[in-house]
Length: 119
Picture 1 (tube, rainbow, N blue to C red):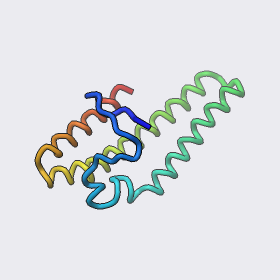
Picture 2: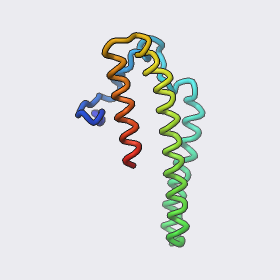
Picture 3: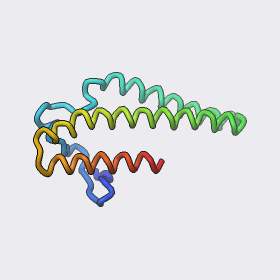
Picture 4: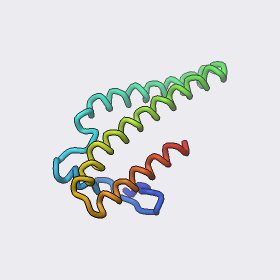
């Protein structure tokens, strides 16, 4: 399975990990908070299922839009937390190592921020 990479057209294969920090430590930036993240994602999933239920039940459109906004904000908040953890883990490791890896990680993080801002 291939997923979209940075805006420069790069892509990664599922399971492939370009983070040298992960290779060095055996964990991703989000590993320490994995249980909390999964709990948060399950809560967001519940919000989205609630949206489906609201539409099925013909709830007033403004009320549905309010819940769409809440779900969107929850996903954005989750994304920012992951980005922060990536910066602290992968980018910080690359900065310690120096060389081109640091530049690549900064470009990767910048592209991720750009994608978040477009949403």
